[in-house]
Length: 96
Length: 242
Image (cartoon, rainbow over all chains, first blue to last red; front, side, top):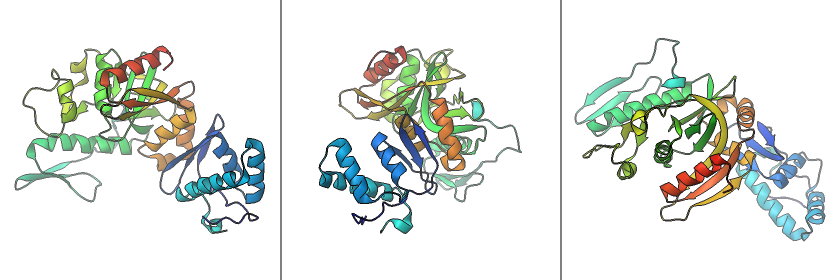
């Protein structure tokens, strides 16, 4: 997945979901595949609405968890790649 | 078919056809027949086809691929794919005193959220036959042996209950028995992942699974020893820490 540091985050696809104790369970409406995100993943999922840039999120997470920005950015790319593979990100913005 | 039986409509007709040394089963609504290579396996394949239809077409419950046992109203759910060892573990748990609800399907009533029994005959694969020599007559052959639950333990068939424990079991021959906690969301995801008709209900299904598992503990059980797996699940029902 290509991500520009100063570009917007990809948009989460509309999908049936249920949040339980701060963790979300998402159902891919096309395939029936189920994705479960932990609390941090759930927090990021809620931010995938294009109101935040990649750089802003990396900075916020880096500060909150006291982790170096390059490490955060690498982990974020892996996380978003997994969501894209699960078909949960809007195709129109995946290359953004 | 227990709770998944339907009394509406005209029923379904399964046609068995001889084709040389093998047989075919024409399943209602299916585009292809089931091919049965060995005539002795015809009963197993027919039961499997009927079971499949019951699980996919029931309209009053959300059905999840899982073994289900209970102590009183407290239900233990063991979700898993076919051949994951559910029936073997369920048989051992029933023999240890738990009630039998199903070795195949967790049925959650769409209205009440209660678990309802689907106490079909227990289907044991050849790999588990040596574990239960009294249940499988010597000389038995075929792909599966179907055991009436009452022959595992008299009076063992339960009816309803609420989910108290969800256990994802991974059978690893020779591995030590380990139990790790899952969040309830993880448990719900597990059940949703094994639901037969999740796309038919989507939002409603996730809400139902959430409501049905309130207060339940969820775990991942790994190992190769059947007795230790039974003990671990009994301890979970007792509320003992893993």
